[in-house]
Image (cartoon, rainbow, N blue to C red; front, side, top):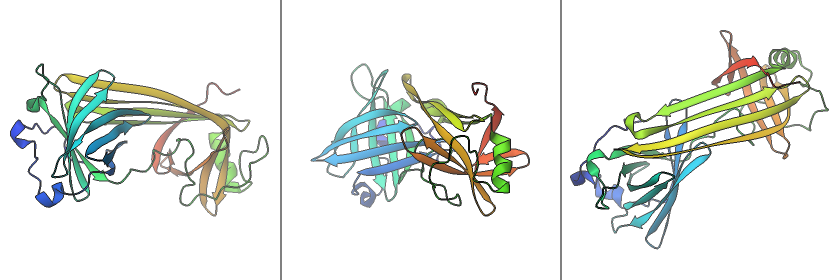
Length: 275
């Protein structure tokens, strides 16, 4: 992802993109992917009106604006702490979002504006502890719900993993900083109790900070249900069956004593709230 520290002036509002890029439709879903998280921008256009959301984790900011004759958009980004000016422009599969604070005269202050680069297409959901995730590649397909207390599917590999994880907590922490422009952070904990029950908790926040204008929002969520280890050949996975009926699966790996879920490092510590 390109740096978010670019400072633009009013003369650069057009961003100097080719006319062929400016003429393309803005409507669609775009993602900006950092090392440990993603931010999703969703835009829709109807009769010259532009609307959308900028979301990270469970939180989102609302965008409302207009589209000009060249297909570029501008308008207002609404945050809990106040409104910011935004402009958007596409070039092929890339989109540039410009965000600026509003001056006392009601006009955007381009001297402190920031530019964020997005790519068309939604980023995959944050694995592995997210709710309702589809089975991961390589993990065994979903099977009927196991009986109470069953922690694995009976294979030696599944028993090994269940012994490692039963009564433990899996923690995944992510943070993404755009320097002075804001960022995104999240934490997810899955408590894997020895009786086959689990409790999932997450919390996240997303912020936009532009030239002294700051918007921040945070939230938290949770799930509970049953967990177990499933295998397919020499591949192990963890299955979460939520109380609402959703099923999520993710691949498990161990490298140099570290635990990975769907390729992402998780911390394994005692699950202090389990019976």
